[in-house]
Length: 208
Image (tube, rainbow, N blue to C red; front, side):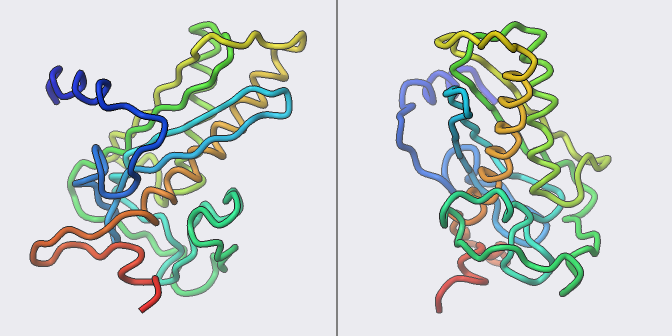
């Protein structure tokens, strides 16, 4: 909320950083589990890198009902959030609408590529990347959602001769990365130590 906090964050930025209950994810929650800070990246077929970081403070849920399965499961790389595979959306009340109350909630994400992109292309890519939240959080775009996705390019790699194809690929991978980042933020979170604090995913579904 303050400029000096943003400046301090840039001073401590590193290639490797803590996920889950850290930074902007510290006080984050979902309707049923502790929220958190998540990140994921991938390289497109044309060699362009895409990365996402997200603070998951969602009004809805990121898991299928009362099961440990994430809505992001189809996009998981390896076992980055448990490797549980797809659950069944039709079981355990997965499709029931669950929200954490009549209070504003904001999931904020930044997606970055090393490609050289214009402002117009960045806007289109932000729209595409936003779909990653729809792939990973239910419900989405609710009246109390203040969710925002920023998109940026570091300008290191030129797009290929087929610009539209490259933009389409970057945007698709960006949405996948953001969906993965959401699940990782919840998977890596730890619950806070105060009365009636929401449990973390590992509290509910991890090894006992």
